[in-house]
Amino acid sequence: MLKGSRTISGEELLAIEAITGTTAPKEIHVPLKGKVGAGAAVFAIDDGGDDVVEAPADARHGTVAVQVSGDSMFPAYEEGTILYYSRLLPPSELVNKRAVVQLGDGRIFVKIVRPGSDPATWTLTSINGQYADMADQIVEWAAPIDWIKPR
Image: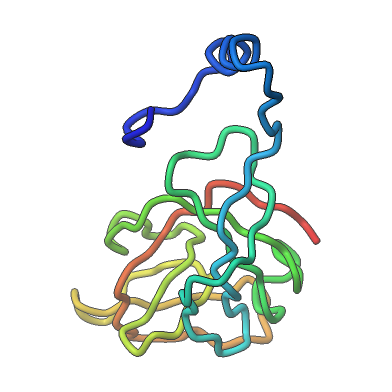
């Protein structure tokens, strides 16, 4: 557990509380990495800031959160919605799915991942029809959305 290779079970947590006489925190927090563009151009921020948000109860190890900025994914995600993700994958594993994506130039968005015009590029699609597709983008990584906390 100390090495981070596994989490503490509920039973173990209760036993630790009984042995130590200390009440463990019941809320788990994860880092809030910054904003993710949904129409707005947002650059990845990982400056080691202290912002945290409450994690979902079943959060995986390594889960982080981002806050939606813009309305290109409306009505699925409104401005201020918190998205949680825990795995970075190649975009090919998330075709036709909503994902948090970071482009080669550092911009980070929430979009639907679709194939581009060649195998090295991807088209990023919005739900809101007022936004054009972002065609033939170089995607550095994509992350499936594990959990959503509406604003």
